[in-house]
Amino acid sequence: MGSPGGLREVRRLCHWGPLVALSVVIVCSATAIADAVLWYWPLDTAGGSVNFIMLINWTVMILYNYFNAMFVGPGYVPLGWTPEKSQDCMYLQYCKVCQSYKAPRSHHCRKCNRCVMKMDHHCPWINNCCGYQNHASFTLFLLLAPLGCIHASFIFVMTMYTQLYNRISFGWSSVKIDMSAAKRDPRTIIPFGLSAFAASLFALGLALGTTIAVGMLFIIQMKVILTNKTSIESWIEEKAKDRIQYYQTDETFIFPYDMGSKWKNFKQVFTWSGIPEGDGLDWPVREGCHRYSLTIEQLKQKADKRVRSVRYRAIEDYSGVCCPVTKGVKTFFTTPCTEEPRIALSKGDLILATRGLKHWMYGEKILNSAGDGSHSCQRQ
View (cartoon, rainbow, N blue to C red):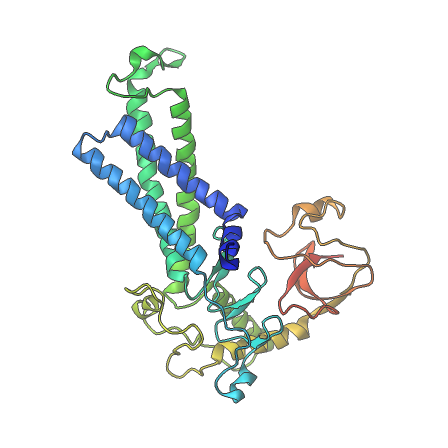
């Protein structure tokens, strides 16, 4: 009989995000290895052997960091957690779901249904949160995946170039590619045919797309890491500036966890042991900052959100489906690209909207006190 933990990890893996991500890794790696060994750089040469080892190395390192980020997880605030000093509770938010106080830098994830230590975001590609324990592995995956894809792209391009170079003939008004047996390289075990060309071209597209998309994510992650922030904390800092400007107060918000140098901030995430510094609950702060500067600012923003919130009453029933086809074409095509749950509404329900788009609002049903975060619902 399998353990509940093992079953949970299998379910985590059997999600569209990991399945797509692993498929891209497998297709690019397998195609690059096949192209290199069979047609571009055979193993009977020193360069071919080194190239083969490098391709295997990229694959192993990418998968190692990917599975580390997925299965090690971000680390969760213990259920029922309270600060050591009872008077510190006044600086912290309380999570009704976890029945505990939110430690500094932690946030509740509705997908994981737990308060996550130093939560950065919930990533659908690993079907888990990126946070305190797996931030380094996740970022290394974002670095290694583009580097491996660049290497693979070079193999794809050179394979197609070397195999098609002697097969292309140019006429006055046409270009012909001869894929017949007469043009085949006698040294190859398997001839480079049309299917091999199509597979290489498809893998090249995947590799280039992955390089651009994942490379941009890596740059974003490094920007927040070098300031010792998370994506959520960057957003909190922006809202702090907006709140101070809106009320024209004399206060100044200083992010408390910036250690003053990029190298010190870098070491907060990346260590030689692979184990991040600290315990994920208590964090060093820069000189002159209060231990709970960030959580105090969060409490101010939460109070401000309540002041600025607008109450609405639903005039139609809404099932809570992701893409409602019965609520209008514009509503359907402007559905927020997020996995956040939609609130099922009945006619007459009261909604407290905290922010909104043209056709959608973010907020919570007033009578529903089960959760402690915002949801998205349709604007009526």
